[in-house]
Structures are given as C-alpha cells and as structure tokens.
View 1 (cartoon, rainbow over the protein chains, first blue to last red):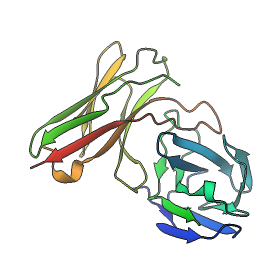
View 2 (cartoon, each protein chain N blue to C red):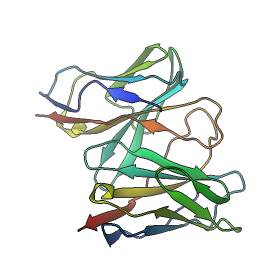
View 3 (cartoon, rainbow over the protein chains, first blue to last red):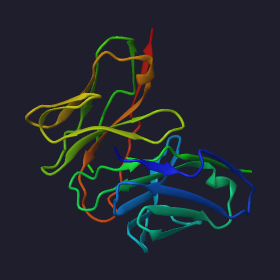
View 4 (cartoon, each protein chain N blue to C red):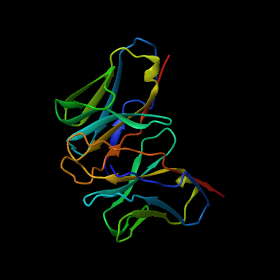
Length: 114
Length: 112
C-alpha cells in the first residue's frame, strides 16, 4: 500500500508568518505534487517535482516555494502567509512513467491564516 | 483531459449495491478511467482504475462498455462509512506535470 503522510492535519498561522508543510511518501515514487483544494474550485496544482531537486511550477505558484532534497520528502513553503492562502493543502505522489497518471494523496493539511 | 459528467448526488440505504455512472464521450484512445473517493477534510483516495471491460478489487468493481464512452463504479453492499464524494477522472500521463482535474464528483449519502 502506498502511504503518503503530511506533517499536520490542522494548522493555524498568522499573516506574515513563514509556513512549512511537509509531505513524505514511502513508495519510492519519483514524482510528487502539491495541490490546494477550495470549495467550488476543485484541486489546483501549485508545484510539481519530478525528481530530487527538480521542480516545475503548477497553475498557482505565486506566494509558494518548494523543496525536494530527498526523494521521499517534498516540502511546500509559504514565504509570508496571507489570509487568501487559507485552504486545504494536498500532497500526492506518482510513479514515474506510468501511463495512467494515478496519483496517491496524503490526508491533507487544513491551513487557516488569521 | 476528457470532460466527465456524473450525478451530483445519490442516496442509498445500508446494505444496498450502489452504481455511479460517469459519462466521458470524448475519451481518447490512450485514456484510462480512474475513480477516487474523498471523505470530508481528507485527501482523495484511489479506488479503482480501468481501461476496458471489467475490473474488480476488494473495494469496488468498474464496468466499462466496449465504446468506453461511459463507466460505472459499483459498490457492493454499502455501509455508512461509504458516505463520501466519488470522483471519476479520465486521462493519461502526458508528461512531467500531468495534473489531475477533479470535477464536482458525486456525493453519496448512505443511511440506515
């Protein structure tokens, strides 16, 4: 069974704080993703990493950065949190080269920025 | 990505079989059909995937007709814990950043 874990289920931060969201997968997947999910907007891709130290911007990268120093770990960083970054953040992983694009998700982190 | 259409909501009693149908008229030759389940405040969970005919696992069955323009997720003997949103996705890995596009899904409510 693929297991993707996220460091926190719930997080409350203040505007301007630097926020770190951690994601770890145990299936040796090369690809990892960060999404945010908001009501009525579905899932939106923030960043994607196709291998260690490799990253690509997704659809909404502004205000975020990422770090992938080890294959199993993908971190999302909010440099200066703002209230419009209050959302559910989802991490996913995928095996490189799979035709079907099956992604495995973590439980999510519900972030509230006050 | 092929557009999918599925019912917004469904209700069922515990112990019944539930079938959720998804339409995907413009599915491409190399596209796969994948279903995810999502509970409130949790990430989507992969349930089942298929390309054609029938696929069965310990959780569900997926029926895909020969023309592949629709598919049906079948949940045998649902329980209260199957109450969730079910998403049908159609697509394939087209490159490094192939993202998943979730629609509104089908909200299944199971009651006693």
